[in-house]
Image (cartoon, rainbow, N blue to C red; front, side, top):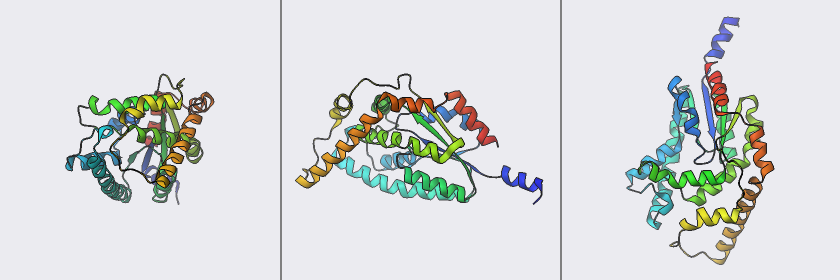
Length: 266
């Protein structure tokens, strides 16, 4: 193959930018300027989810949901996953340049998608945005009111668990994407002095559902064990040395934007 043909083939490879970060991390704000400069299709399961909730007449203030609304939320998420997956498949088939806007809470799902993109001929890059657990919970709590009801606020327990899983995946993504991994700490106060118990009391307990079906002893034991495991993981991730590791492997917002633009311009 001639050099011209090789260059043409490389330049023609589609790009996919995968986003990872807990709810409220500020991923969208970091790539907003980039989206105005490059022709990119943004795919976010939340967009499908919110539209489905609206169609069902379910409030986007999910932290204060009724039992019926929680049931509808589950149905909406199942339907949204199908629509989102179909949209991703269609975009990949069309070789569109993509932004996959997600949390990255499931490393297996994210890595499978990355592999699928590469097999389809894509160059891929990840932007990981870190914010403290308190900041994530704070921003989520205010999101519904701040958007005047146009955006959803998740139940804080969901945010709590998602933050834990996303933060746990930092090392996995750092290793997987290598030079095509860029991280940003989008929080002026990334360290916290509060304990997990204090955070739960402040952010989770006020929105704890009180109208759920009683659990069997076995179900309650399983639930307690799962919560204890998550709480311990969160406690570990809140330690200063863990947060410092993320900081040490991060760049400024401006540096991240520059790296992403260079990647998209290849």
